[in-house]
Structure formats: structure tokens, C-alpha cells
Amino acid sequence: MSTATLPVYTKKDFQTDQEIRWCPGCGDYAILSAVQSVFADLGIPREKFVMISGIGCSSRFPYYMNVFGFHTIHGRAPAIATGLKIARPDLEVWVATGDGDSLSIGGNHTIHMLRRNVGLKVLLFNNRIYGLTKGQYSPTSEIGKKTKSTPYGTNDRPFNPISLAIGAEATFVARSVDVFQGHLKDTLKKAAAHRGSAYTEILQNCNIFNDGAWNGITEKDARSEHVVMLEHGKPLVFGKNRDKGIRMNGLDLEVVQLGNGATEADLLVHDEHDPRPAYAFLLSHMEEVPGFPTPIGVLRSWNNVPRYEDLINQQLADVQAKRGKGDLGKLLRAGDTWEVRA
Image 1 (cartoon, rainbow, N blue to C red):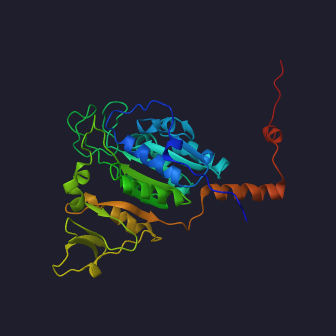
Image 2: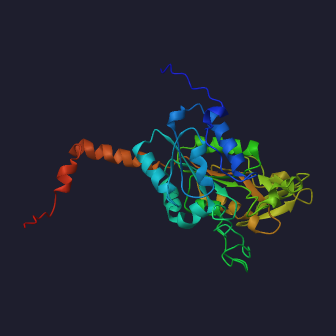
Image 3: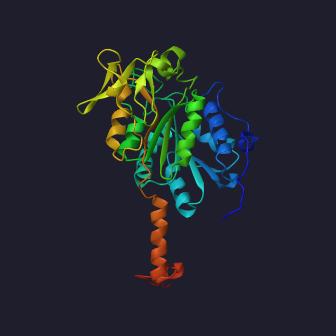
């Protein structure tokens, strides 16, 4: 039995001496604070963490975390993180990305990383705008959004990030909000404990180029009426007086008023461990229907899928056991060769 003791850290151990270059009031500060606090609580040696990012405001993250990290290229963070996780499956590899970085130029990489179930923890910062390049519409901007690149309003239908992740059959999909600090930390801890791809959408504000992006759910008076907190094994209840609920009606969901012929016993009980993604997919589209709340929490957590890095490394071990270690020189000289003579 190992006698090694777990490291004891504080949030300060994960802070750096770098000047933080985000606009005052940006939601990124709240996310950074939550991640630093959570890393300190995980009991994992600091040298085991790696933070990888692409391009965007969120992608400054590696500079502000006192762990190993890479600030990579636009949209390619999942690909680079995948390579690292295959080579070093013992590392805790986290990806910080934005709605533009992850869902536009990086959309293809995101989908394939999720379908492979690579053991990465992905933090999607969603402020519905391109902030670093000063306010163009992003893949999550709502229809009709007037920006510098769409002065008459965008005609693009926005991506629903968690629906996209569930459609790719991601094994862990969650959503939280920058200003819901307690909830955000709890969600990040659940993501950290998941063995496969853990995809967490974090709704955040860009107070310079898209201020009030999520006011409909973050304002104090709006939270109870427009948010349903997902808790495994508990019925889907919401409302200021907890007098509304969600139940199944055939193959679809419906909102019901409790006490009006409906009780909590009639409501849908949240099961984040449902092996089929269909249930989580239904939840992910609730806020797009008038009268439905926005789901916050873990939509799906399914651990019975092998990790990509484990499969790859087992395959390598099996081949080496049969054929021995490869020789790069022989490989380069194999097949058709020719000589060039003067």
C-alpha cells in the first residue's frame, strides 16, 4: 500500500505573477478564480496539470495558471491536447476555449475529440461574441444580433454547444455560469472526476462587446423563474415558489404548474447517468422553447466508454509484444526507394 500523502495546496499556489489582461468586469476573472480554487482542492500534484488553449480572450488562461501549459493556434487546442493525452495519459489535461475558437474554426476538432472520448476536461467560455477581435458575431450569437460584422443583424442560426456535444456522444456534458460561483466549482469538480471527455459550457458575460449576454438567467429576480438546477435523482422543479415542474408528455417535455392537477410525483426525475444521449439532448433544447427554463448542471455523465488514449496505448503495447519495438530508420527506408545520381 502506498504511503504517499496527497499534496496540500491553496488557491494562491495556482496563481502566477503575470499581469491579467482581461477587461475589468470580464466574466473570465470569475472562471479563473473558480478553476484555481478547484485545482487546489483536487489533491493532484501541481506538475500533473496542463492547461491548453487556442486563440481568444479565454485562451490567455495558461498564462494565469501556475501549471504547465500551451497557448496554441486558433481552434486546434483539442487536437494538440489529444496528442499530449495519448503520449502522457497520466497528466490532467484541461482545455480553455471560447465559442468562436471552439465552434467555428475549431468545430471539427471539437466534434472528433468528443466522439473519441479523449480524457480531456474542456471549458467552453460562451459569451456569444468574438471579444478579442472586438465584437463580431460568433457561432452562438442569437439570430438578429447586430455586431460590427452584422450591422443589420445576423441570419445564422446559433449553435447550441451542449446539444452539439451530446450529438457527438460526449460522455460528460455540463453547463454552469460565471457568476454562480458555488455551482461552477461543484460542476468543475464533477468534470475533473470524469475519466473521459468532460465538456463544460460556462455562460459568461462580455461587458464591453456583449454586456448582459445572459441577463435573462443571471439577474437575481430571473434566476428562479428561468433556471432549472439539474440534480441527479431529484425531480425537475423550478420557479420562485418552486411551483413549476417538467414532465414527459409522450416523447417530449412539457412545463406544468404544480398543484393544478400535477404533483412532484408526476415530474421527470433527473438521471445524469442515462446511457442513452436522447434524454440529455431533450434537456439541452429546453431554453429554446418559450416558457421553458435553462438547464444548469450535469446533463450527462456516462463512464462506461473506454478512453481513446487507453485504447491507443493498449494497441501499441499489443503490437510491440508481437513484433517488438519499431525502428524508425527501417521504416523510412522501407518500400520503394531510388538513388539520384549526378
